[in-house]
Image (cartoon, rainbow, N blue to C red; front, side, top):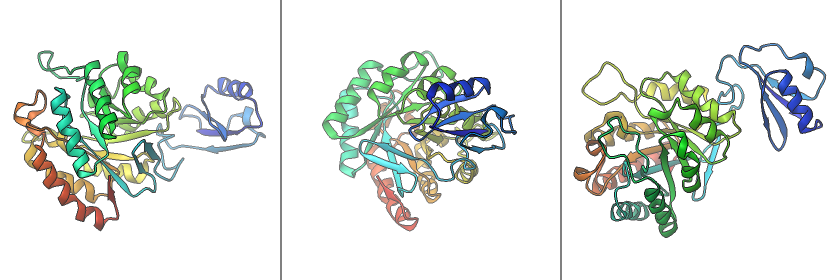
Length: 332
């Protein structure tokens, strides 16, 4: 249950009610928010007679549910607005990992040429093997900040573990929580304490319920700027890396009030299929696309097989424009 308490109460009085009802407490400008255990279906006696608005939720999906907020939340970053009623589809691209200043500058120049606003590159890489490239860390963050200052781009980069979440928040305009870190409560709770937008990727063995519940950890911490990212799930199929769950995306669009970004690069795992999948994703009217590009994918230090070279990305980007026009979307 979600309860809105009128602000004729003091913060201390509202927090006392939250304590007595074992509720999560969030103070907003207009009202206090109390979030009870999902098993609570009856209004607590202590709030009866007070000025309240309350929402009885069907399950553990509470703040992210369209039963609570029927409209998709709007995300605002320095050079872009998407989600909500914006009609914008944000296109996020760049290499899997930042490898050098020359490489990331070539990537930034590609975005500038195409009028795209948001550059992504990993600095802390949660790799499957301990013997593969783990990222440039702080050095990479500083290079991304340099590209932002020089080219006026937004930056998105990934956190690997809770020890450096605050460092990534300091440098990034959007903090990415990768599929392998989706269940890390240290990361989720730290991201809940900031207002910085957070892109949460679905774990490859995760149900939609578990995916959105992970988002609830961030939302219940007070951060309303959460974006969901579908990037493929593990199925019985062996010819592709994962299976892009567009059925799941349809469910999220129907029931969840968070913006949705799709990542076809990680889903298929091979560059040959990225363009077709991207066009299918856009046709669903989603809020964003995340596509990996590299100046020379053959020498990439991570995920070489799935990254498009810059000419391939340009061809894809121009092919998206008629689809965007047909569904009333703007590519930004």
